[in-house]
Length: 177
Image (cartoon, rainbow, N blue to C red; front, side):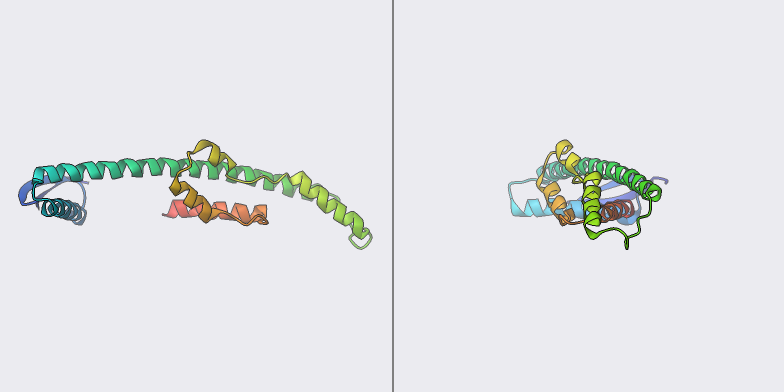
C-alpha cells in the first residue's frame, strides 16, 4: 500500500505524518493519543504537554511488551495443542486399525463376566493420561494462563474423543480469530 500524508493535530500541535495505514485507523490513533495527553495535562497542572506525551509513550510501550509476551505464550500453547492433537490423531488411527484387526466376538455366546474383564484390560491398554501436562512444564504459570486453563478444563470422565474435539475447536477458534 502506498504511503499517504495526513495533516493532524495532537495536543494543539499541528503536524504532517506519512503512513501506509487507512485514514480511519490513523485518525483513531491520533484521537486516542490526543485524548490521553489532554487527560494527563488536565489532571496535573504541573505536567507539560511534552511530559504527558512521554508518559503516554511509556505507557503504550509497556502495553506492547505485555501484549508481545502474551502472544508468545499463546503461540507456545497452540504449539502444544497441535502436538497433542497430532499425537491423539496417531493414537486414534492405531486404535481404529487394532479394532479392525480384532476378531469379532459373538456377544450372545460370551459370558457376562468375560466381557467385563475385557473392558477393564482395554482401559488399561489405552493408558489415558491428561493432556496439557507439557504446557505446565514449559510455560510459566501466569494469572492469565491459569484463567485460560480453568476455562478449558474438562470433567474427569471426558473421553479421548471429547478431548480431541475440544482441541480441534480451540485450534479452529485461534485460526479464525
